[in-house]
Structure formats: structure tokens, C-alpha cells
Image (cartoon, rainbow, N blue to C red; front, side, top):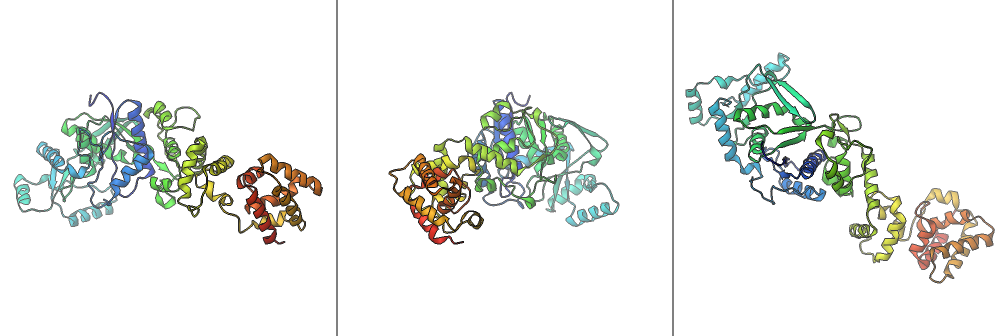
Length: 486
């Protein structure tokens, strides 16, 4: 047994941002670890220096922390298996590459880029299923190898894949998997710059860090035969594999930035709640075996299992994410929403406004069922923060008749006479004026809403009046009567 309790890892490359697919991989590893009292390790696979982006490691850690995926070991946290940045482990990989060469399981390759390009073009002309290295350097003599090394000729280290074998392994999600070794290339393990490729570094680190379960995306399934060969070559116990289904656009193409946002940071910046995003991502390929769709993190931990992960690709449905965001928003207490709204106001044009907590709480209570994002407590009801300067044209055409200004002036006078009015007082005032004018309440309510908000829809009419307050309502009616013409 590799380790008595589960140890899993999330091992992203620092290429600029955290993809939602990466978030799902991290989440499933995190849930599995927490469900089984295990350890969740973060390891940064930064050996591809061509793709390395400055500041990306810090961004990754920040995104994981925002999502609530706090790792037990890794950069900034430490642990007994560090360093956790692969670029700081180069001597380790060289040691194990040398061991493979001594065993005949790997070999030096001195082929030039020109020869490799020519080889690939020739194989493409022959319409071979895939381009593979032809093992040319495997046949070099010890003397040739020694001379090349002494001369400092550029080299890589390749895996020596024996032909005519079947490579077999089990996968929790894919079940039993087999690959023919004739279809597996002699993969580069150490590049000419001395850095390892993903394949060697991944296997060495997973072994040394005692990783028990490798939970990663389906795109790595085709690499697993190479990893299995490496485990066997070293004589190491293999971890348990679980390859997660692809994330797909609604048209079933692979989820990509060309069709919308794919970065966790994008969703965070657009105002999605971390609870909603985690809930949504958890359901991209997994379910608990029932119809439940609303989860908090603790709920997910208590019922997560890899056996319930599906093989089929998971559709990234933005409408469902929006629905979940609204549901999570409504589950928050008014006091939580208040702090969030105050923070959002500081990012808006109303940041210099002097709004009391009581006033903002009334807005929250009136709008809570009408919004999906915290910013909509501002964007969809700016009339709470400033008087309208424009009025919805369709509403004017429909509800602003020639006799409306006189009727609203009458209503304004009735409202002005109220003393510290309640919602009920506003309702009684409208009913009274409606009766005196011998018109239906609806004939007054719609133009009244237009006058005080500039819009035809919104929260309850009397909630709106009560939140704005008598003096503001009176001013807005006067302004509308002067401004709106038909």
C-alpha cells in the first residue's frame, strides 16, 4: 500500500489563469480527500518554461483560496514532501532519469530538430496513424554515446517502449483500459534544456509524495500508458487512476475560450458567488444518485464519491450556473447581503452616496427575489440611489394619458400631507385619491411607478414608495409631471 490514508494532488501548469476544468479537477481531489480524511496536495508543474507566465502561480493560489479549496501541502503552506514547484526539483528528476538509462528503460537521443521534422514528414506521407520516433539513437554504441556527451551535443532522454506488448491498467471511471505498446511513442523524459517533461516529473513526484489516487482530466488518459510503463520500470506501486469526463460547450465541442469565459477569475469578477460556482462545477460529471442540485461545500464532502462520476462529457450550461447563483444568493442572510452590497456600491458610481444600513436592507428585502447577482441590487434598480432623468418610452405611451399629470398632482398632495407614512399609509392614500377621482387604482399605480422610478417594473409599489420616503416621492412626482409629455 502506497499510504494508509488517501493522498491526492492538484498539479496545474502556471499558464496564466485557472480554467474551470482545472477547478473541477481540484474540487474533486479536494472532496475526495476531505471525504476520506486524506491529504490534498498542490504541486505546481512549471517545467515547461515556454508556457510559463509570470505571476501565474500567485493567481492560481489566489483563485483556489477564493473558491475555498485550501490545500494541506504545497507552496506557501509547506509540508514534508516539498519542494512543491517542479522547477526546484530538477536534480531529483535527473537522478531518476539516470536510473532508467542504467536499466535500459530509457536512452539518450541526439537527433537534430531537422532529422525529427524530416522523420515526421515521411511518416505523414506514408499516412501512418501517428508520427513516432524510430528508435534511431537506441542503437548507438556506448562509445558513440560517450563521444556525443563529451562533445556537448544537444540531447534528450527518451522512454524505451518495448513493442508488441499490451499495457493494461484499471481506472475508477473508465474501468479496465488497454493500450497496445506499438501505438505508444518513445516519449521524451528530459528535454534538451535539462527540464523534465510532464511524464517523468509527474510519475516521480507522485511516487515520492506518496500519492494514492491520480484524479485528472480525460485528456491525460492517452498519457497514462507511458506513466504505467514508468511505474513498472522503477518497480513502484501504481496509484489508483480516475480520469474525469471532458467539459463541453452546448454544441458538444470541447469547452474553450473561443465560445465564452473559461477562467475562474472571469466568473469571480463577474460577480458569481464561490458557493454557486463550486456547486455548479461539482455537478459537471458527478451526481449523488438523486435529483438534488443545490449543495454547499459541506454537503458535497459528505456525499462525494468517484464511483458516481460519469464517463460521458459534461455540458457547461451557463443558464444553470445563473440559476444556482440566484438560489445561493437568496439563501444568504440579509446581513451577509448587506456587507456584499456595501462592497459593490464602493465599486460603482454611487460610491460617494451616504446610504444607511436600514435603507440598504430595505432595498435587499424588496429586491431579493428579483436578482441573480449582488450587482443587480444596484444595476436593475438605480432609482433607489438617484432620481430618474429618463423615463421608459413604452410605459409613457401605454400609461401616461393627458389627464395623468393632474391626477398625480392630486396624489402628490395627499402623500405630502401624510405624517411619517408606512407602506399601508401610501396604499390608503392612493385608494383615497382613486376613489375621489373615480378612476381604477391601476390607472394611477402604473404612471406613479413610472414617475418615481422611470421604469414600468420593479418591487411592490408601496415598498418602493416607503423605501424612497415621502419627501423624495413628492419631488419625483413633481419632476415627472414637468418632464413627461405625450
